[in-house]
Length: 136
Image 1 (cartoon, rainbow, N blue to C red):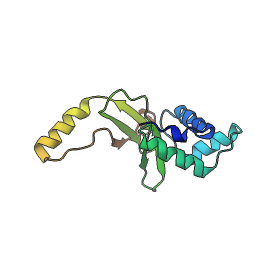
Image 2: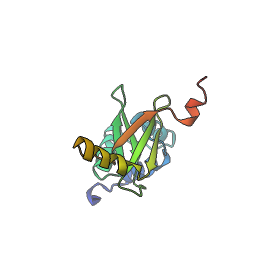
Image 3: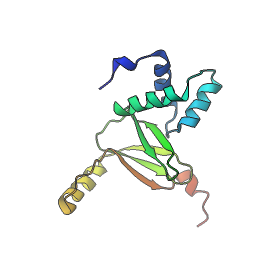
Image 4: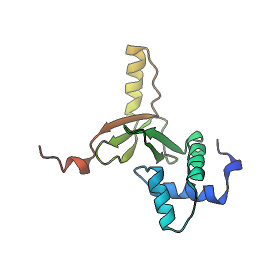
């Protein structure tokens, strides 16, 4: 549910800027890009805005192995059963809008008596670009 109470000009700028990162971003990267554009927004405001956007399911947040928060704009999602692919080498995140998680969720529920949240699954591996640099 969108909250009109946080529609400030600064927060709208952040909301629009995050759409420029199809493979996700970290706050440091977002702050640097805003600064390069001459847009001075404090880190506290960026974090608060991202927290609000996460609460409204506009961005998703996960932590990497170094406990660094990564964000991904997901407002363009077409399905309740989407998931993410995260490259372990370049840290890019790919949104996958696919119903194949329905089958996995059903299997886990029936066979293991556990209901998973199929819209917050992150599978890790290597993207096609990073795999091309690995000698087999």
